[in-house]
Image (cartoon, rainbow, N blue to C red; front, side, top):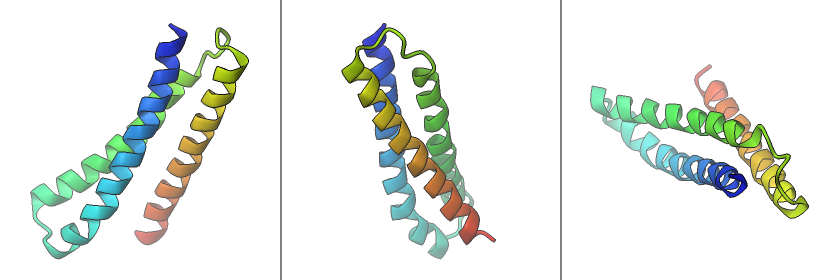
Length: 97
């Protein structure tokens, strides 16, 4: 049980990183070619990025059965994820103003 929660936090962080790369890679293309499908895919990546934060929080809720090393790892990964998510959403918010 405890390893699956740690893997959930790590998996959500990897999904976050991968989708950020996809978002920033395709944002210039979508700006040039603004078809409906391209915009849907761009906003879908934003939804997946925000959803990865929710998934990480679900895995992070109960760390009582973890060892100290696993708790530290979970805290570091979760903190990096939330900081990255805040920077991403803040950047998108600032650019769209």
